[in-house]
Image (cartoon, rainbow over all chains, first blue to last red; front, side):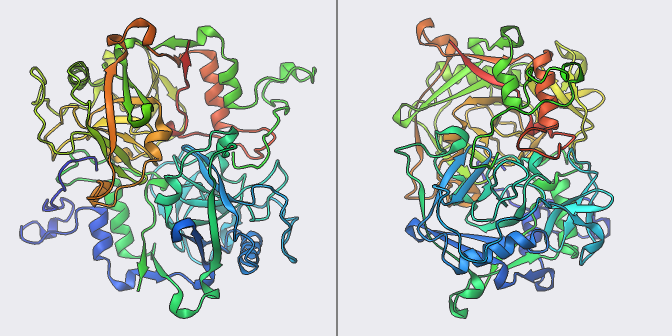
Length: 300
Length: 300
Protein backbone atom coordinates (compact mmCIF):
# COMPACT_ATOMS: atom_id res chain seq x y z
CA UNK A 1 0.00 0.00 0.00
CA UNK A 2 1.29 3.46 -0.71
CA UNK A 3 2.09 4.49 2.82
CA UNK A 4 5.07 5.88 4.55
CA UNK A 5 4.82 3.78 7.69
CA UNK A 6 4.50 0.04 7.77
CA UNK A 7 1.04 -0.87 8.94
CA UNK A 8 1.06 -2.81 12.16
CA UNK A 9 -1.56 -5.48 11.69
CA UNK A 10 -3.58 -5.36 14.85
CA UNK A 11 -7.06 -4.66 13.55
CA UNK A 12 -9.63 -7.22 14.51
CA UNK A 13 -11.02 -8.95 11.45
CA UNK A 14 -14.69 -8.12 11.38
CA UNK A 15 -16.05 -11.19 9.65
CA UNK A 16 -15.07 -13.65 12.38
CA UNK A 17 -17.74 -13.04 14.99
CA UNK A 18 -17.00 -16.23 16.89
CA UNK A 19 -13.73 -14.70 17.97
CA UNK A 20 -15.05 -11.25 18.66
CA UNK A 21 -15.37 -11.77 22.38
CA UNK A 22 -11.66 -12.29 22.81
CA UNK A 23 -9.82 -9.25 21.58
CA UNK A 24 -6.47 -10.97 22.06
CA UNK A 25 -7.19 -13.39 19.21
CA UNK A 26 -6.40 -11.67 15.95
CA UNK A 27 -6.98 -13.63 12.76
CA UNK A 28 -4.84 -12.56 9.83
CA UNK A 29 -6.20 -9.31 8.45
CA UNK A 30 -4.25 -9.13 5.21
CA UNK A 31 -3.64 -11.44 2.27
CA UNK A 32 0.08 -11.48 2.98
CA UNK A 33 -0.56 -12.54 6.58
CA UNK A 34 -2.71 -15.41 5.29
CA UNK A 35 0.11 -16.53 3.02
CA UNK A 36 2.71 -16.24 5.76
CA UNK A 37 0.61 -18.35 8.12
CA UNK A 38 -0.63 -20.97 5.64
CA UNK A 39 0.11 -24.50 6.88
CA UNK A 40 2.41 -26.86 4.99
CA UNK A 41 -0.64 -28.77 3.76
CA UNK A 42 -1.85 -25.73 1.84
CA UNK A 43 1.08 -25.87 -0.55
CA UNK A 44 1.81 -28.05 -3.59
CA UNK A 45 5.29 -28.63 -4.94
CA UNK A 46 6.08 -27.61 -8.52
CA UNK A 47 7.41 -30.56 -10.56
CA UNK A 48 11.00 -29.95 -11.71
CA UNK A 49 10.16 -30.75 -15.33
CA UNK A 50 7.80 -27.76 -15.32
CA UNK A 51 10.43 -25.33 -13.99
CA UNK A 52 12.35 -23.36 -16.58
CA UNK A 53 15.34 -21.48 -15.22
CA UNK A 54 16.62 -18.60 -17.31
CA UNK A 55 19.94 -17.14 -16.19
CA UNK A 56 20.74 -13.71 -17.61
CA UNK A 57 23.72 -11.38 -17.58
CA UNK A 58 25.12 -10.90 -14.10
CA UNK A 59 23.86 -14.31 -12.94
CA UNK A 60 20.38 -12.99 -12.24
CA UNK A 61 17.59 -15.51 -12.59
CA UNK A 62 14.10 -15.65 -14.05
CA UNK A 63 12.14 -18.81 -13.17
CA UNK A 64 9.09 -19.84 -15.18
CA UNK A 65 6.56 -22.47 -14.23
CA UNK A 66 5.30 -24.23 -17.36
CA UNK A 67 1.68 -25.24 -17.90
CA UNK A 68 1.79 -28.44 -19.98
CA UNK A 69 -1.89 -29.17 -19.38
CA UNK A 70 -2.85 -25.97 -21.17
CA UNK A 71 -0.32 -25.90 -24.03
CA UNK A 72 1.12 -29.40 -24.42
CA UNK A 73 2.63 -29.01 -27.88
CA UNK A 74 4.31 -25.70 -27.10
CA UNK A 75 5.60 -26.95 -23.75
CA UNK A 76 7.09 -30.02 -25.45
CA UNK A 77 8.94 -27.68 -27.81
CA UNK A 78 10.11 -25.48 -24.94
CA UNK A 79 11.51 -28.47 -23.06
CA UNK A 80 13.37 -29.62 -26.16
CA UNK A 81 14.71 -26.11 -26.80
CA UNK A 82 15.99 -25.91 -23.22
CA UNK A 83 17.65 -29.34 -23.48
CA UNK A 84 19.34 -28.25 -26.70
CA UNK A 85 20.63 -25.06 -25.07
CA UNK A 86 18.93 -23.19 -27.88
CA UNK A 87 18.42 -19.93 -25.93
CA UNK A 88 21.99 -19.80 -24.58
CA UNK A 89 23.62 -16.66 -25.88
CA UNK A 90 20.33 -15.18 -27.11
CA UNK A 91 18.65 -12.13 -25.55
CA UNK A 92 15.65 -10.25 -24.26
CA UNK A 93 15.24 -8.07 -27.33
CA UNK A 94 11.88 -6.35 -26.88
CA UNK A 95 10.41 -4.48 -23.89
CA UNK A 96 7.22 -2.52 -24.54
CA UNK A 97 5.94 -0.46 -21.63
CA UNK A 98 2.77 -1.68 -19.97
CA UNK A 99 2.74 -4.70 -22.25
CA UNK A 100 5.45 -7.34 -22.67
CA UNK A 101 9.14 -8.26 -22.38
CA UNK A 102 10.09 -10.74 -25.11
CA UNK A 103 13.13 -12.97 -25.62
CA UNK A 104 14.64 -15.53 -27.95
CA UNK A 105 16.53 -15.09 -31.22
CA UNK A 106 16.21 -11.52 -32.41
CA UNK A 107 17.40 -12.44 -35.91
CA UNK A 108 14.60 -15.00 -36.38
CA UNK A 109 17.12 -16.96 -38.44
CA UNK A 110 18.67 -19.32 -35.94
CA UNK A 111 17.93 -22.93 -36.87
CA UNK A 112 15.66 -24.82 -34.52
CA UNK A 113 16.84 -28.16 -33.11
CA UNK A 114 15.64 -31.35 -34.75
CA UNK A 115 12.27 -32.48 -33.51
CA UNK A 116 10.80 -29.05 -32.80
CA UNK A 117 7.24 -28.88 -34.11
CA UNK A 118 6.86 -25.91 -36.45
CA UNK A 119 3.28 -26.57 -37.52
CA UNK A 120 1.37 -26.26 -34.25
CA UNK A 121 -2.22 -25.30 -34.96
CA UNK A 122 -3.96 -22.47 -33.09
CA UNK A 123 -5.70 -24.23 -30.20
CA UNK A 124 -5.83 -21.92 -27.21
CA UNK A 125 -8.61 -23.44 -25.10
CA UNK A 126 -9.13 -26.76 -23.35
CA UNK A 127 -12.41 -28.60 -22.73
CA UNK A 128 -13.73 -27.93 -19.24
CA UNK A 129 -14.52 -31.63 -19.06
CA UNK A 130 -10.84 -32.50 -19.40
CA UNK A 131 -9.78 -30.68 -16.23
CA UNK A 132 -8.09 -32.89 -13.65
CA UNK A 133 -9.70 -30.96 -10.80
CA UNK A 134 -12.88 -28.94 -10.42
CA UNK A 135 -12.33 -25.21 -10.80
CA UNK A 136 -12.61 -22.88 -7.82
CA UNK A 137 -14.80 -20.07 -9.09
CA UNK A 138 -14.10 -16.41 -8.41
CA UNK A 139 -17.53 -14.91 -7.67
CA UNK A 140 -16.92 -11.53 -9.32
CA UNK A 141 -17.70 -10.32 -12.82
CA UNK A 142 -15.08 -10.12 -15.53
CA UNK A 143 -15.09 -8.02 -18.70
CA UNK A 144 -13.59 -10.81 -20.81
CA UNK A 145 -15.15 -14.14 -19.84
CA UNK A 146 -18.42 -15.51 -18.46
CA UNK A 147 -16.59 -17.03 -15.51
CA UNK A 148 -13.17 -16.92 -13.93
CA UNK A 149 -11.47 -18.92 -11.23
CA UNK A 150 -8.55 -21.19 -10.47
CA UNK A 151 -7.57 -24.74 -11.40
CA UNK A 152 -4.57 -26.72 -10.22
CA UNK A 153 -2.77 -23.57 -9.10
CA UNK A 154 -3.52 -21.55 -12.25
CA UNK A 155 -5.86 -18.61 -12.87
CA UNK A 156 -8.37 -19.52 -15.57
CA UNK A 157 -11.14 -17.97 -17.61
CA UNK A 158 -14.05 -20.12 -18.72
CA UNK A 159 -17.22 -20.27 -20.74
CA UNK A 160 -19.74 -23.08 -20.61
CA UNK A 161 -17.52 -25.64 -22.30
CA UNK A 162 -13.94 -24.35 -22.39
CA UNK A 163 -11.19 -23.13 -20.11
CA UNK A 164 -8.14 -21.03 -20.92
CA UNK A 165 -5.28 -19.22 -19.27
CA UNK A 166 -5.61 -15.42 -18.95
CA UNK A 167 -2.98 -12.82 -19.84
CA UNK A 168 -2.26 -11.64 -16.30
CA UNK A 169 0.88 -9.89 -15.10
CA UNK A 170 3.76 -12.38 -15.28
CA UNK A 171 2.08 -14.86 -17.59
CA UNK A 172 4.34 -16.21 -20.34
CA UNK A 173 3.16 -16.61 -23.91
CA UNK A 174 4.39 -17.66 -27.32
CA UNK A 175 5.20 -14.88 -29.75
CA UNK A 176 3.90 -15.66 -33.19
CA UNK A 177 3.50 -14.21 -36.64
CA UNK A 178 0.13 -13.34 -38.13
CA UNK A 179 -2.74 -15.75 -37.69
CA UNK A 180 -3.00 -18.70 -38.27
CA UNK A 181 0.62 -19.05 -37.18
CA UNK A 182 0.74 -20.31 -33.58
CA UNK A 183 4.48 -19.94 -33.00
CA UNK A 184 6.86 -22.62 -31.79
CA UNK A 185 7.78 -21.48 -28.28
CA UNK A 186 11.25 -20.34 -29.32
CA UNK A 187 10.20 -16.70 -28.95
CA UNK A 188 8.52 -16.06 -25.60
CA UNK A 189 7.15 -13.02 -23.79
CA UNK A 190 6.06 -12.15 -20.27
CA UNK A 191 3.29 -9.66 -19.48
CA UNK A 192 4.74 -6.63 -17.65
CA UNK A 193 1.73 -4.33 -17.26
CA UNK A 194 -2.03 -4.15 -17.05
CA UNK A 195 -3.40 -7.52 -18.13
CA UNK A 196 -3.78 -7.47 -21.97
CA UNK A 197 -6.70 -9.86 -21.84
CA UNK A 198 -7.61 -9.13 -25.46
CA UNK A 199 -4.82 -11.59 -26.27
CA UNK A 200 -6.62 -14.43 -24.46
CA UNK A 201 -7.57 -17.20 -26.87
CA UNK A 202 -5.51 -15.52 -29.58
CA UNK A 203 -2.06 -16.64 -28.42
CA UNK A 204 -0.71 -19.68 -26.60
CA UNK A 205 0.08 -19.08 -22.94
CA UNK A 206 2.58 -21.60 -21.65
CA UNK A 207 3.28 -20.62 -18.05
CA UNK A 208 4.10 -17.83 -15.64
CA UNK A 209 7.14 -16.16 -14.13
CA UNK A 210 7.40 -17.20 -10.49
CA UNK A 211 10.73 -15.52 -9.75
CA UNK A 212 12.43 -12.58 -11.40
CA UNK A 213 9.46 -10.54 -12.62
CA UNK A 214 10.98 -7.40 -11.15
CA UNK A 215 14.00 -7.99 -13.36
CA UNK A 216 11.98 -8.31 -16.58
CA UNK A 217 9.56 -5.50 -15.68
CA UNK A 218 12.31 -2.99 -14.90
CA UNK A 219 14.29 -3.43 -18.11
CA UNK A 220 14.68 -0.29 -20.20
CA UNK A 221 11.88 0.02 -22.73
CA UNK A 222 12.88 -0.35 -26.36
CA UNK A 223 12.46 2.74 -28.51
CA UNK A 224 11.71 0.83 -31.71
CA UNK A 225 8.28 -0.12 -33.03
CA UNK A 226 6.42 -2.32 -30.53
CA UNK A 227 9.21 -1.85 -27.98
CA UNK A 228 11.92 -3.67 -29.92
CA UNK A 229 15.35 -2.40 -28.95
CA UNK A 230 16.63 -0.06 -31.63
CA UNK A 231 20.18 0.03 -32.90
CA UNK A 232 22.44 1.13 -30.06
CA UNK A 233 20.06 -0.08 -27.33
CA UNK A 234 21.41 -2.99 -25.33
CA UNK A 235 19.53 -6.26 -25.38
CA UNK A 236 19.73 -8.27 -22.16
CA UNK A 237 21.98 -11.29 -22.79
CA UNK A 238 20.63 -14.71 -21.84
CA UNK A 239 23.33 -16.95 -20.39
CA UNK A 240 21.31 -20.15 -20.29
CA UNK A 241 17.82 -21.62 -20.06
CA UNK A 242 17.44 -25.04 -18.40
CA UNK A 243 14.72 -27.24 -17.00
CA UNK A 244 15.18 -27.84 -13.28
CA UNK A 245 14.80 -31.56 -13.96
CA UNK A 246 17.93 -31.43 -16.12
CA UNK A 247 20.02 -29.92 -13.31
CA UNK A 248 21.74 -32.00 -10.63
CA UNK A 249 19.39 -32.40 -7.65
CA UNK A 250 21.63 -30.29 -5.43
CA UNK A 251 21.51 -27.38 -7.84
CA UNK A 252 17.75 -27.26 -8.35
CA UNK A 253 15.57 -24.55 -6.88
CA UNK A 254 12.26 -25.71 -5.45
CA UNK A 255 8.95 -23.88 -5.45
CA UNK A 256 5.51 -24.40 -4.04
CA UNK A 257 2.18 -23.04 -5.27
CA UNK A 258 -0.74 -22.58 -2.92
CA UNK A 259 -3.42 -25.26 -3.27
CA UNK A 260 -6.36 -23.33 -4.71
CA UNK A 261 -8.70 -25.76 -2.95
CA UNK A 262 -7.27 -24.99 0.48
CA UNK A 263 -8.85 -22.94 3.25
CA UNK A 264 -5.81 -20.68 3.12
CA UNK A 265 -6.50 -19.82 -0.50
CA UNK A 266 -10.17 -19.18 0.21
CA UNK A 267 -9.13 -16.83 3.03
CA UNK A 268 -6.57 -15.16 0.78
CA UNK A 269 -9.15 -14.48 -1.94
CA UNK A 270 -11.68 -13.23 0.62
CA UNK A 271 -9.15 -10.69 1.89
CA UNK A 272 -7.93 -9.71 -1.56
CA UNK A 273 -11.54 -8.79 -2.30
CA UNK A 274 -12.29 -7.23 1.09
CA UNK A 275 -9.40 -5.30 2.53
CA UNK A 276 -10.45 -3.90 5.87
CA UNK A 277 -7.54 -3.27 8.16
CA UNK A 278 -5.54 -0.37 9.58
CA UNK A 279 -5.02 1.02 6.10
CA UNK A 280 -8.26 0.25 4.30
CA UNK A 281 -11.56 1.85 5.25
CA UNK A 282 -13.68 0.72 2.35
CA UNK A 283 -13.48 -2.92 1.22
CA UNK A 284 -13.79 -3.28 -2.55
CA UNK A 285 -16.22 -6.17 -2.35
CA UNK A 286 -14.58 -7.84 -5.33
CA UNK A 287 -11.28 -8.61 -6.97
CA UNK A 288 -10.19 -9.04 -10.55
CA UNK A 289 -8.78 -12.41 -11.61
CA UNK A 290 -5.44 -10.81 -12.48
CA UNK A 291 -5.30 -8.92 -9.18
CA UNK A 292 -5.43 -12.13 -7.15
CA UNK A 293 -2.20 -13.93 -8.11
CA UNK A 294 -1.97 -17.46 -6.74
CA UNK A 295 0.68 -17.38 -3.99
CA UNK A 296 3.99 -19.03 -4.87
CA UNK A 297 7.01 -19.47 -2.60
CA UNK A 298 10.48 -20.86 -2.86
CA UNK A 299 10.92 -24.00 -0.81
CA UNK A 300 14.14 -25.27 0.70
CA UNK B 1 0.96 -7.38 -29.84
CA UNK B 2 3.64 -9.98 -29.21
CA UNK B 3 4.66 -10.59 -32.78
CA UNK B 4 7.88 -10.53 -34.64
CA UNK B 5 6.62 -8.79 -37.72
CA UNK B 6 4.67 -5.59 -37.76
CA UNK B 7 1.13 -6.34 -38.81
CA UNK B 8 0.17 -4.59 -42.00
CA UNK B 9 -3.34 -3.38 -41.40
CA UNK B 10 -5.20 -4.42 -44.50
CA UNK B 11 -8.00 -6.51 -43.04
CA UNK B 12 -11.44 -5.28 -43.89
CA UNK B 13 -13.32 -4.26 -40.77
CA UNK B 14 -16.28 -6.59 -40.58
CA UNK B 15 -18.79 -4.43 -38.78
CA UNK B 16 -19.09 -1.80 -41.49
CA UNK B 17 -21.27 -3.57 -44.05
CA UNK B 18 -22.12 -0.39 -45.97
CA UNK B 19 -18.54 -0.30 -47.14
CA UNK B 20 -18.22 -4.00 -47.85
CA UNK B 21 -18.85 -3.67 -51.56
CA UNK B 22 -15.77 -1.56 -52.07
CA UNK B 23 -12.73 -3.50 -50.93
CA UNK B 24 -10.49 -0.49 -51.48
CA UNK B 25 -12.14 1.38 -48.59
CA UNK B 26 -10.59 0.16 -45.39
CA UNK B 27 -11.83 1.68 -42.15
CA UNK B 28 -9.31 1.68 -39.32
CA UNK B 29 -9.03 -1.85 -37.93
CA UNK B 30 -7.05 -1.14 -34.76
CA UNK B 31 -7.40 1.23 -31.82
CA UNK B 32 -4.10 2.89 -32.69
CA UNK B 33 -5.29 3.54 -36.23
CA UNK B 34 -8.43 5.18 -34.84
CA UNK B 35 -6.28 7.44 -32.66
CA UNK B 36 -3.95 8.30 -35.52
CA UNK B 37 -6.86 9.26 -37.76
CA UNK B 38 -9.00 11.09 -35.19
CA UNK B 39 -9.94 14.57 -36.45
CA UNK B 40 -8.82 17.71 -34.62
CA UNK B 41 -12.33 18.11 -33.22
CA UNK B 42 -12.00 14.86 -31.30
CA UNK B 43 -9.33 16.31 -29.04
CA UNK B 44 -9.49 18.61 -26.02
CA UNK B 45 -6.55 20.68 -24.80
CA UNK B 46 -5.24 20.14 -21.29
CA UNK B 47 -5.24 23.38 -19.28
CA UNK B 48 -1.70 24.42 -18.30
CA UNK B 49 -2.64 24.81 -14.64
CA UNK B 50 -3.44 21.09 -14.57
CA UNK B 51 -0.08 20.04 -16.04
CA UNK B 52 2.62 19.14 -13.57
CA UNK B 53 6.07 18.74 -15.08
CA UNK B 54 8.59 16.74 -13.09
CA UNK B 55 12.15 16.85 -14.37
CA UNK B 56 14.45 14.15 -13.03
CA UNK B 57 18.12 13.35 -13.23
CA UNK B 58 19.43 13.50 -16.77
CA UNK B 59 16.77 15.99 -17.84
CA UNK B 60 14.18 13.27 -18.39
CA UNK B 61 10.58 14.32 -17.88
CA UNK B 62 7.46 12.93 -16.27
CA UNK B 63 4.27 14.90 -17.01
CA UNK B 64 1.19 14.54 -14.85
CA UNK B 65 -2.29 15.78 -15.66
CA UNK B 66 -4.05 16.85 -12.46
CA UNK B 67 -7.72 16.19 -11.75
CA UNK B 68 -8.92 19.13 -9.63
CA UNK B 69 -12.59 18.15 -10.05
CA UNK B 70 -11.96 14.86 -8.27
CA UNK B 71 -9.52 15.95 -5.53
CA UNK B 72 -9.75 19.73 -5.16
CA UNK B 73 -8.06 20.09 -1.77
CA UNK B 74 -5.14 17.84 -2.67
CA UNK B 75 -4.67 19.48 -6.06
CA UNK B 76 -4.61 22.90 -4.38
CA UNK B 77 -1.83 21.63 -2.15
CA UNK B 78 0.07 20.15 -5.08
CA UNK B 79 -0.08 23.43 -7.00
CA UNK B 80 1.24 25.30 -3.96
CA UNK B 81 4.01 22.75 -3.42
CA UNK B 82 5.08 23.08 -7.06
CA UNK B 83 5.07 26.89 -6.84
CA UNK B 84 7.23 26.69 -3.70
CA UNK B 85 9.70 24.37 -5.44
CA UNK B 86 9.13 21.97 -2.59
CA UNK B 87 9.99 18.80 -4.55
CA UNK B 88 13.19 20.23 -6.07
CA UNK B 89 16.10 18.12 -4.87
CA UNK B 90 13.86 15.38 -3.50
CA UNK B 91 13.60 11.89 -5.01
CA UNK B 92 11.68 8.86 -6.19
CA UNK B 93 12.41 6.74 -3.14
CA UNK B 94 10.13 3.74 -3.44
CA UNK B 95 9.49 1.39 -6.38
CA UNK B 96 7.50 -1.76 -5.61
CA UNK B 97 7.14 -4.20 -8.48
CA UNK B 98 3.67 -4.51 -10.00
CA UNK B 99 2.43 -1.78 -7.68
CA UNK B 100 3.73 1.78 -7.34
CA UNK B 101 6.62 4.21 -7.79
CA UNK B 102 6.53 6.88 -5.07
CA UNK B 103 8.28 10.22 -4.68
CA UNK B 104 8.64 13.21 -2.40
CA UNK B 105 10.68 13.68 0.77
CA UNK B 106 12.01 10.33 1.94
CA UNK B 107 12.85 11.73 5.38
CA UNK B 108 9.25 12.82 6.01
CA UNK B 109 10.76 15.70 7.98
CA UNK B 110 10.98 18.47 5.45
CA UNK B 111 8.79 21.39 6.47
CA UNK B 112 5.80 22.08 4.23
CA UNK B 113 5.31 25.58 2.81
CA UNK B 114 2.92 27.95 4.55
CA UNK B 115 -0.66 27.46 3.48
CA UNK B 116 -0.51 23.73 2.77
CA UNK B 117 -3.56 22.02 4.24
CA UNK B 118 -2.51 19.22 6.55
CA UNK B 119 -5.94 18.26 7.79
CA UNK B 120 -7.69 17.12 4.61
CA UNK B 121 -10.46 14.70 5.48
CA UNK B 122 -10.87 11.38 3.64
CA UNK B 123 -13.33 12.15 0.85
CA UNK B 124 -12.58 10.00 -2.14
CA UNK B 125 -15.82 10.14 -4.09
CA UNK B 126 -17.86 12.87 -5.79
CA UNK B 127 -21.62 13.08 -6.24
CA UNK B 128 -22.68 11.86 -9.67
CA UNK B 129 -25.02 14.85 -9.77
CA UNK B 130 -22.08 17.26 -9.60
CA UNK B 131 -20.47 16.04 -12.84
CA UNK B 132 -20.05 18.74 -15.47
CA UNK B 133 -20.77 16.26 -18.26
CA UNK B 134 -22.76 13.06 -18.51
CA UNK B 135 -20.61 9.95 -18.20
CA UNK B 136 -20.01 7.70 -21.18
CA UNK B 137 -20.66 4.22 -19.85
CA UNK B 138 -18.47 1.23 -20.60
CA UNK B 139 -20.92 -1.62 -21.21
CA UNK B 140 -18.81 -4.37 -19.63
CA UNK B 141 -18.83 -5.76 -16.11
CA UNK B 142 -16.26 -4.78 -13.52
CA UNK B 143 -15.21 -6.64 -10.38
CA UNK B 144 -14.99 -3.45 -8.32
CA UNK B 145 -17.88 -1.15 -9.17
CA UNK B 146 -21.47 -1.37 -10.40
CA UNK B 147 -20.64 0.77 -13.41
CA UNK B 148 -17.60 2.15 -15.13
CA UNK B 149 -17.06 4.68 -17.87
CA UNK B 150 -15.48 7.98 -18.76
CA UNK B 151 -16.10 11.60 -17.83
CA UNK B 152 -14.32 14.68 -19.12
CA UNK B 153 -11.38 12.63 -20.35
CA UNK B 154 -11.04 10.53 -17.20
CA UNK B 155 -11.82 6.87 -16.51
CA UNK B 156 -14.34 6.60 -13.70
CA UNK B 157 -16.06 4.02 -11.54
CA UNK B 158 -19.56 4.69 -10.27
CA UNK B 159 -22.38 3.46 -8.12
CA UNK B 160 -25.90 4.89 -8.08
CA UNK B 161 -24.93 8.17 -6.48
CA UNK B 162 -21.15 8.57 -6.57
CA UNK B 163 -18.25 8.67 -8.98
CA UNK B 164 -14.57 8.13 -8.31
CA UNK B 165 -11.28 7.73 -10.13
CA UNK B 166 -9.92 4.17 -10.48
CA UNK B 167 -6.38 2.98 -9.73
CA UNK B 168 -5.39 2.20 -13.32
CA UNK B 169 -1.85 1.99 -14.69
CA UNK B 170 -0.34 5.48 -14.60
CA UNK B 171 -2.83 7.00 -12.19
CA UNK B 172 -1.26 9.23 -9.53
CA UNK B 173 -2.32 9.12 -5.90
CA UNK B 174 -1.53 10.64 -2.55
CA UNK B 175 0.54 8.51 -0.20
CA UNK B 176 -0.83 8.69 3.30
CA UNK B 177 -0.39 7.26 6.76
CA UNK B 178 -2.95 5.02 8.40
CA UNK B 179 -6.61 5.92 8.11
CA UNK B 180 -8.13 8.45 8.71
CA UNK B 181 -5.08 10.33 7.48
CA UNK B 182 -5.67 11.49 3.90
CA UNK B 183 -2.18 12.79 3.14
CA UNK B 184 -1.27 16.22 1.87
CA UNK B 185 -0.11 15.56 -1.70
CA UNK B 186 3.55 16.06 -0.83
CA UNK B 187 4.19 12.33 -1.20
CA UNK B 188 2.80 10.98 -4.47
CA UNK B 189 2.81 7.63 -6.24
CA UNK B 190 2.05 6.34 -9.72
CA UNK B 191 0.62 2.88 -10.42
CA UNK B 192 3.17 0.79 -12.35
CA UNK B 193 1.46 -2.62 -12.62
CA UNK B 194 -1.86 -4.42 -12.66
CA UNK B 195 -4.51 -1.98 -11.47
CA UNK B 196 -4.66 -2.15 -7.63
CA UNK B 197 -8.33 -1.28 -7.62
CA UNK B 198 -8.66 -2.30 -3.95
CA UNK B 199 -7.19 1.15 -3.25
CA UNK B 200 -10.13 2.89 -4.95
CA UNK B 201 -12.10 4.99 -2.46
CA UNK B 202 -9.37 4.42 0.12
CA UNK B 203 -6.82 6.91 -1.17
CA UNK B 204 -7.02 10.22 -3.02
CA UNK B 205 -6.24 9.98 -6.71
CA UNK B 206 -5.14 13.32 -8.09
CA UNK B 207 -4.26 12.72 -11.71
CA UNK B 208 -2.40 10.55 -14.19
CA UNK B 209 0.98 10.36 -15.85
CA UNK B 210 0.59 11.37 -19.51
CA UNK B 211 4.29 11.31 -20.40
CA UNK B 212 7.18 9.40 -18.86
CA UNK B 213 5.45 6.29 -17.54
CA UNK B 214 8.14 4.12 -19.11
CA UNK B 215 10.69 5.99 -17.01
CA UNK B 216 8.87 5.42 -13.71
CA UNK B 217 7.89 1.85 -14.54
CA UNK B 218 11.41 0.77 -15.47
CA UNK B 219 13.15 2.08 -12.35
CA UNK B 220 14.99 -0.55 -10.30
CA UNK B 221 12.72 -2.03 -7.67
CA UNK B 222 13.61 -1.23 -4.06
CA UNK B 223 14.69 -4.16 -1.93
CA UNK B 224 13.32 -2.73 1.31
CA UNK B 225 9.90 -3.37 2.79
CA UNK B 226 7.16 -2.23 0.40
CA UNK B 227 9.76 -1.47 -2.26
CA UNK B 228 11.46 1.40 -0.45
CA UNK B 229 15.06 1.74 -1.58
CA UNK B 230 17.35 0.22 1.02
CA UNK B 231 20.65 1.72 2.10
CA UNK B 232 23.01 1.67 -0.84
CA UNK B 233 20.25 1.69 -3.45
CA UNK B 234 20.09 4.86 -5.49
CA UNK B 235 16.98 6.98 -5.30
CA UNK B 236 16.13 8.86 -8.50
CA UNK B 237 16.85 12.56 -7.95
CA UNK B 238 14.09 15.04 -8.78
CA UNK B 239 15.48 18.21 -10.33
CA UNK B 240 12.25 20.22 -10.30
CA UNK B 241 8.47 20.02 -10.36
CA UNK B 242 6.55 22.89 -11.95
CA UNK B 243 3.08 23.67 -13.21
CA UNK B 244 3.07 24.37 -16.95
CA UNK B 245 1.11 27.56 -16.20
CA UNK B 246 4.08 28.84 -14.19
CA UNK B 247 6.48 28.37 -17.10
CA UNK B 248 7.00 30.95 -19.82
CA UNK B 249 4.59 30.27 -22.67
CA UNK B 250 7.40 29.33 -25.03
CA UNK B 251 8.67 26.65 -22.65
CA UNK B 252 5.37 24.95 -21.98
CA UNK B 253 4.55 21.54 -23.39
CA UNK B 254 0.99 21.12 -24.64
CA UNK B 255 -1.17 18.02 -24.53
CA UNK B 256 -4.56 16.96 -25.77
CA UNK B 257 -6.88 14.29 -24.41
CA UNK B 258 -9.42 12.57 -26.63
CA UNK B 259 -12.98 13.79 -26.14
CA UNK B 260 -14.72 10.80 -24.58
CA UNK B 261 -17.96 11.94 -26.19
CA UNK B 262 -16.50 11.84 -29.71
CA UNK B 263 -17.15 9.27 -32.42
CA UNK B 264 -13.42 8.57 -32.46
CA UNK B 265 -13.51 7.54 -28.81
CA UNK B 266 -16.55 5.34 -29.38
CA UNK B 267 -14.72 3.66 -32.26
CA UNK B 268 -11.59 3.30 -30.15
CA UNK B 269 -13.48 1.58 -27.33
CA UNK B 270 -15.31 -0.67 -29.79
CA UNK B 271 -12.00 -1.85 -31.21
CA UNK B 272 -10.31 -2.18 -27.81
CA UNK B 273 -13.12 -4.57 -26.93
CA UNK B 274 -13.28 -6.32 -30.30
CA UNK B 275 -9.91 -6.82 -31.91
CA UNK B 276 -10.39 -8.58 -35.22
CA UNK B 277 -7.59 -7.87 -37.62
CA UNK B 278 -4.61 -9.64 -39.15
CA UNK B 279 -3.35 -10.62 -35.72
CA UNK B 280 -6.52 -11.33 -33.76
CA UNK B 281 -8.82 -14.23 -34.58
CA UNK B 282 -11.09 -14.10 -31.57
CA UNK B 283 -12.45 -10.72 -30.41
CA UNK B 284 -12.70 -10.51 -26.63
CA UNK B 285 -16.16 -8.96 -26.68
CA UNK B 286 -15.28 -6.73 -23.76
CA UNK B 287 -12.58 -4.56 -22.27
CA UNK B 288 -11.62 -3.66 -18.73
CA UNK B 289 -11.79 0.00 -17.69
CA UNK B 290 -8.05 0.03 -17.00
CA UNK B 291 -7.25 -1.64 -20.31
CA UNK B 292 -8.86 1.17 -22.31
CA UNK B 293 -6.71 4.21 -21.48
CA UNK B 294 -8.10 7.47 -22.83
CA UNK B 295 -5.81 8.52 -25.69
CA UNK B 296 -3.53 11.47 -24.94
CA UNK B 297 -1.12 13.17 -27.33
CA UNK B 298 1.41 15.95 -27.21
CA UNK B 299 0.34 18.95 -29.24
CA UNK B 300 2.61 21.46 -30.87
